[in-house]
Length: 254
Image 1 (tube, rainbow, N blue to C red):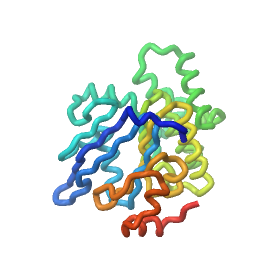
Image 2: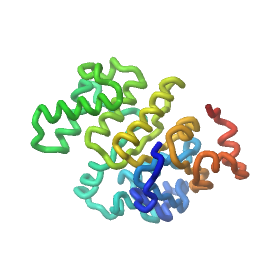
Image 3: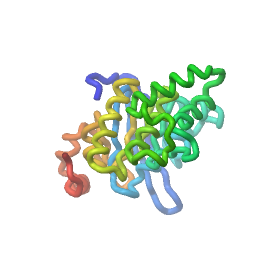
């Protein structure tokens, strides 16, 4: 993690965010600011609203109330073209990695680049793909298919595909879900390396305490649609809030 964070410049600002589905209140007026160069984890049990939050930030869902500003743009006020342009600055690492199984590793990376950046030469595309693969340690897998990769390698490839466009913000959705402990450690290390190498700001949606502890500058505990506590890991861990204590007691921290 970076030693110093510019806390004068926010890249994501959330104010009074509310979201319901029918009578089910998922987010109940939450506030959060993520600063440039900072990794922030949103922790919570399944169904707590973590995925809804990341979808609102990405412009995939609209808030019922409140405001979400990303890189100075209020998400729900953007038209389709403006939203597409903003998304070029945001990297999405999906839980499933969202790879094209019929495409090689090279093609999975080249496709979003050539779709979004016009008039690139073949050499420029090759160089960008090689750089992204080198960043995640998959240089030797360039001609393989996703089906030939391990679960951890698929996660790495998904991250590489987001890095190909040099995003300012990374959104990680359960980056260590379904992985063995050794591979989880490798992915955690990779997220720190991405932060340091590309100077990204990241929101990490997870229920993995080890991931949050090892990769993030701050964590935000999302319980029953509200942030009960936001702070550095030890501050949140050492709380008298019973619901947070139960969450930590259930999880094992290395």
